[in-house]
Length: 301
Ligand code: ATP
Image (cartoon, rainbow, N blue to C red; front, top):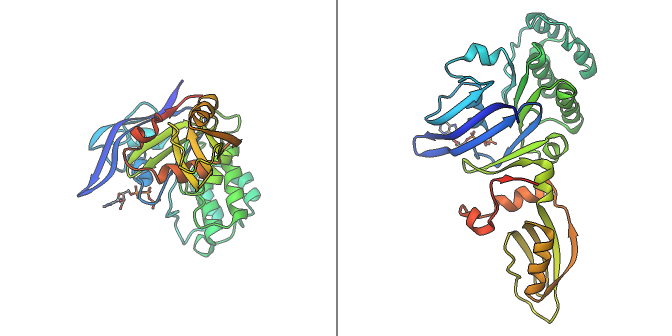
C-alpha cells in the first residue's frame, strides 16, 4: 500500500514529560485517517512533527517521502493545514484572504459554507473562522490535508459542514486527510483508518472496519448460579455483578463464545461496539494493556 506519512520509532520528551514513545505509524495514501486520544495523549505533538515544527529526538518522520524538518518547502507545498488556533490575519476580509491564497477553487466552498466575502476575519464567529481556515488550507489543492481538532468548540451544524468538506476534499481525488479529534462519533463517521494514542504510545492503528469487526460486546449470563466475573482472554472491559455481565472483548466471536461457555456461562446477546465504547474501554486499561488483553496494535480483519 502506498503511504503518504511514515513515522518510525518516534520519541519526544519535554523535560520530564514523555509526550511520544516509540510511535510507529504509516498513513496510507488516499482516504481519511483519524487520530484519537485523551487530552495530553500526544496528538498535537505528533502532528507538529508531521508539519516539521518539531525535529524527531529519536526515530524518523517522512512526509511524501521526505523529512519535513529539512525539506519544509517541499512538504508544505503539498500540504494544507488547520491547527486549533486557526491563525488568520484579523484585518483581512474573506475575499482578500482568498485572493491572497491566489486561487478560485474554494469560491464554491465559500458559498457552500455561507461565508460573506466582505466580512472581516476579525469579525467572524468561531464557526466561520474554522470554515475560513479550512478554505485556506484547501486553496492550493493539497494532496495532504492535516487538521488538528478542526471542529473543536463548534456547534453541531458547523461541525457537520466541516465534516462534509473533509469528505468532499477526499472524494474521488486520491487525497489524504489526517485529522485529530476528541469527537469519536465524528471520527467513526468519516475515518477509514483510526489510530489511538494513550500517554504517548500507540494503542491501536487499524482500519475502522477491522477495528469494529475485531471487538465485540457480549452480554453473558451464568448458567448455574455462578456470580463471579467471567475471565475471558481478550476482555478489554467488563461491567456487571452477580450472574450477568457486559463484556467488551477483542478477538474472534466463535473463540470468545467458546471461552464464555467453558467458564459456565452463556452468551445472551452480542453487539458491535461503537468507536467511543472501544476508546473508553482502552483508555481505562493499565499501561501493560497488551499483556492484559493480548491484542496487537495493528488490527487486521
Ligand atoms: P489535547 O487533546 O489536550 O490537545 P494532545 O493529545 O494534543 O492533547 P499534546 O498537546 O501533544 O497532547 O501533549 C502531550 C504531552 O506533552 C502532554 O503531557 C503535554 O502537557 C506535554 N507537552 C506538550 N507540549 C509541551 C511543551 N511545549 N512543553 C512541555 N510539555 C508539553
